[in-house]
Structure formats: C-alpha cells, structure tokens
Length: 259
Image 1: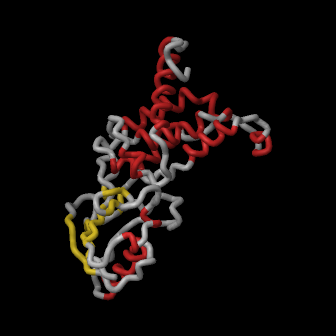
Image 2: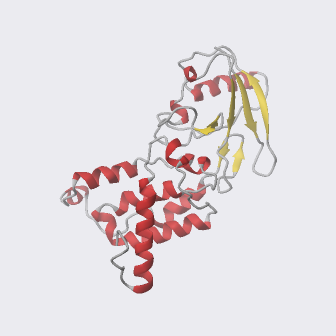
Image 3: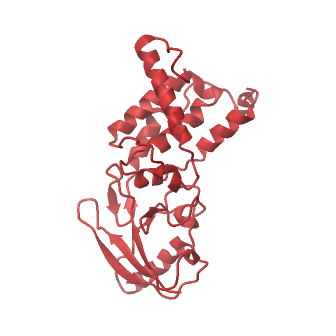
C-alpha cells in the first residue's frame, strides 16, 4: 500500500511552520505508524533532505512520547491505543494522512512533530510524589487495602502522561492528567498524609503552566490511550474543595464530600 502524508514541518520553536506533502514508498500494512515514518525518513535522508523529527522511545504504548495528532485525533483513529500501536492497516491504500504535533499553548512545538511537555514535569514536581517515610516494600504490603481501592489507584496510575487529553480539549485542560496523578497517590494510605498539600500544589502548578479549565465534555477520556476515566476529575475536584476548606477554616462542612 501507499499513502500520501501531509506533515507539519517546523525548524524550531522560534520559526513558523507549515504542512508539506510526502508520497510514501510501498508499505507493509502490518507496520506501525512510527515504522512508516522511519521508512519515509530513510527516503528523505537518501535524497539529502531533513528527516521528519518525531518523539518515540518504548514503542510499546508505555512511555507516551510517541504522541502525534493523526487526521485531527490525538494518537490516531482507534480508541485506547497510543500512536506507536496504530498500524498502517488502519488506513486505506491511497489515503492522505495529516500528521501534526499536539496543539496546546503549554506544549510549544520544538521541531516538526516534537513538543515540549515540561509543563507536566513541573506539575509532578509540585506534588506527584510521597515524602513521608513508608519503609521498604514489605512494610507497605502489610497495610490492608481493599481491592476496590487498589484497583482504582492502579487505574489512575495507568496514565502515561502523553498529553492527548490536553490536545483534545478545546481549553487545553490538563485536569484528566492531574486528577489521575493525584488520585493514584491520594487513594492509598501512603499518600494520605500529604493529600491536601498535594492536590492544592498540583492544581496551582497546572494553572500557572497555562492549562485551561475543564468544561466536562470528556474529549480527554475519549482519546486517552489508557482509557483513564473522567470520574477522576470529579474525585480531584472534591479533594481540592475539601483541602481548600481545611486550609482556610481548619475543618470541612459535612456537605463537602470527600473531606
């Protein structure tokens, strides 16, 4: 099969970019989208042209660095998979495929399809950790945790921080990412002592980074490669409200859920 690519090319973060068209050589329908880009780059390199710059690492849907917007949808046409898990058999012979970076002000384009997601790192540095002493792993395993809570924390921890939720949101909101990262710690006993400080700090860092507000349209969860539920946003909102009350008044009214 052969396809035509409409790819965003941008030299660096200080110059304007534009779309350029490339016709691929014959492709194996079973190759991944990133393997297809590798083949196109080999052709460009042989011609003395600059290859298309894109991020990747594990190519197993774990790291999240492969994030691309394909035909207007973060990560491509399928649900619950990352770009690296998208295969060329998902497209038809002769298709024109538009490939561009994630679009959001907090994710400036560095080159071609590569964006700078350092804003996520700053959010994690503000509260995405546990600083209280919990002992070694065997000690942590002696703390009883119900299966329901353990499963919920694991669901939140599945977030790979790719940023698809931000790219899909019309407000460039990072609420799904932040709520998942806060919840994976807040739900567990080891994270409880710093729960209030954590949620307040992470929401503040999110706002300072320039991410927008959530308007509950759930584009975020629809494109998430790990199918993180929007329910975590509601959970974080309750945690944030309770933490704000405790910080201001020292206690939480009985009408505030999650205090």
